[in-house]
Length: 91
Image (cartoon, rainbow, N blue to C red; front, side):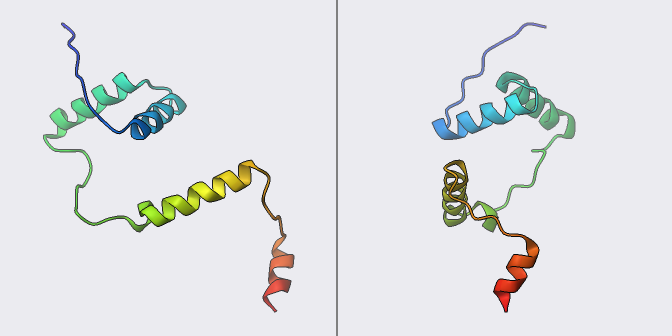
């Protein structure tokens, strides 16, 4: 089957995160996009729900808080407590 090229413009950060994800699951970006296209053709629809509702997990403020937490953890700025210690702090 002849091959062709598809050029897609996207945010650089999104591309990097997508590339990283694909690598982690053993794919490359081209294979992942091809899988998406084949799923669309097979199912005759976009293979996920598209709504105008925003998942609160992906809100800008939550993503910012998550990135801050990740940086703190990477820098060793964490406090480790046992469940017993946490329960004692509750009193």
